Image 1 (cartoon, rainbow, N blue to C red):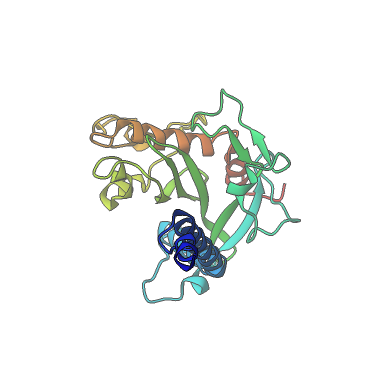
Image 2 (cartoon, one colour):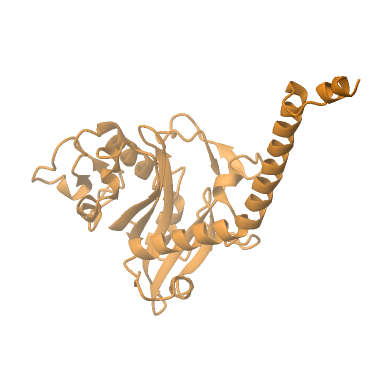
Length: 266
């Protein structure tokens, strides 16, 4: 009889094995969830610091030994109503999450098909902008931009001079384009080509583009960037995302306001 009871409670039985496995899984799940909750503020802080660094880099203000937060705080941050081009005063630009807002019907809009060249479908109705001043005069404006590449959504910042037309710099901080091909968008020698290029022609037409092959000498070269060897679709994606965000459904109204000498208060 004793042997029968021992057999019924064998440590190697299927039921005991399942109970142990379930118990271990529950403990691990609790530990992982707790770690995620504890680490989330630190992760968000690190992500925020990284983006601040990218803004400083694209503006040419980054100093390796300097305090990133202190440098970033010297830049004016505003939230822009993309439809009107005016500043939004009743929301905090520091806490507004434009990416999350695309999932909120009250804070986002569907992009009309004729405008959706960047393949985004929806965008937030507001977006942050970062302004670098020299004294009271605007020196450059940094705009967040994003759009579809070959494999991923590419996120970056475009810096434009106060004329709303001349590029100061471009830098991406998040994408998953093909290593060795599409990731050429991170290479300094390619990004440097953007400096001094023009977004629009004298008639106000959007002209900036990444061409196939190399830019050829001529009247259009001021609007063109060398193509990405073996990554034409990524290059096209960069063209389309820039053209969308500087266009009438993106920051176009805001850039027009700035270039006319206003401060986005209209």
